[in-house]
Image (cartoon, rainbow, N blue to C red):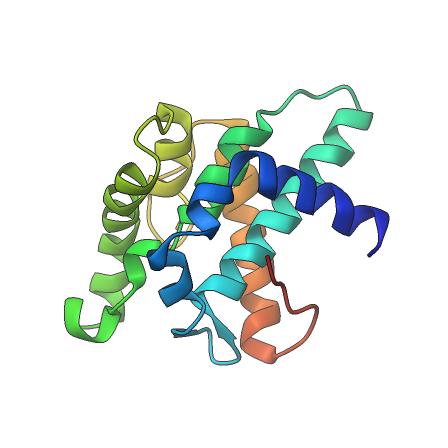
Length: 161
């Protein structure tokens, strides 16, 4: 495993183990997302890119809260599970799944911070007008778009926990 992979694994185990071990996350690994991925693999990719961004920013003396990043990123799309039965169309899904994802996250992590909730609630910016209100929220939102493009075209790494 590469040094970057070891860093990601360390943070996933420290801050995200209860999410990764949940039945909800196991279901996420089975639901297709962005054509060539699953909700779970996409989420792991977003989390990895977000952690790498935090590590880069740390070298530049920019502080970020990695715990909030990990928990917010791991939960950002969990509300999308069962989307065909929950949402009438893509527009409704784009608008509602962040709210549903916060509800799922609160059940998985009862002590979930307000910042993690904000990360999840605002991750669809700029598709929605919900602009992230924290540095960590911007990091996860941008990572989500980068990984979504990679997922859609089937390029880049496949992520596992």
